[in-house]
Amino acid sequence: MAMRQCAKTVSPKVGVFLVLALGLLTGCSKGAPDIYWSSEQLLRAVDGRDIGIRKAAMLVLGETKDKRAIGPVLQALSDRDEGIRQTAALVLGYLKDSAALDSLIKAATMDPSADVRERAAGALARFKDARSMEALIKTLQDQNTHVRICAAHALGDLGDKRAMPALAAALNRKDPDLRDAASVALKKLKKKKGR
Image 1 (tube, rainbow, N blue to C red):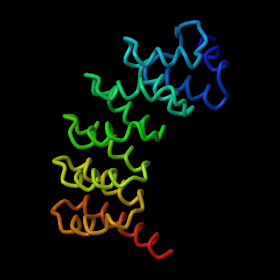
Image 2 (image 1 turned 120 degrees about the vertical axis):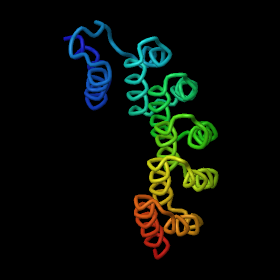
Image 3 (image 1 turned 45 degrees about the vertical axis):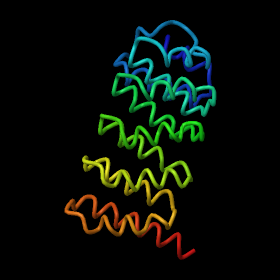
Image 4 (image 1 turned 90 degrees about the horizontal axis):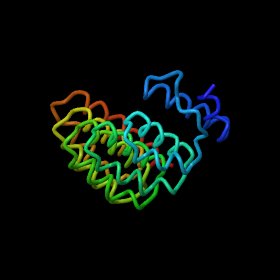
């Protein structure tokens, strides 16, 4: 009942997303607070104590593309909790606001968590900006395989043919998964170049 009330306050699509996000991330299917989740409450929840609710609130705000979320989600990108930083990077990609670009670049290249660097690299693919491309090229050298693979795919998604030399160089790396990702990205770029 309480979860259904949460869903009543927003569009049906977002309401369903809210119910799923709260249920999946907090592990609850009942017992949620008997309140309506307005945008203002979601914004406040981003700074709350419960990690699951914080993640869910960020995800819903990202889904609604509420630009008021930029500040709180940017702040969450430097949170001490790795899961909060991962979610913040993902949501900042959804929001695609240029105010987040420098922070996402820093997260993609310098965050101590490989999972956060991977999420931030994926988010950078949504920013059609030369700085994104430069950061992703740098991230091709990351110590973590998954981060490197994500960076290669992100470069293909960016669609900037200036990334082709770096991707071609990645074809010569020892990591077969990186080589595969670089090959796929190069094919995407060649296809876009031919148009």
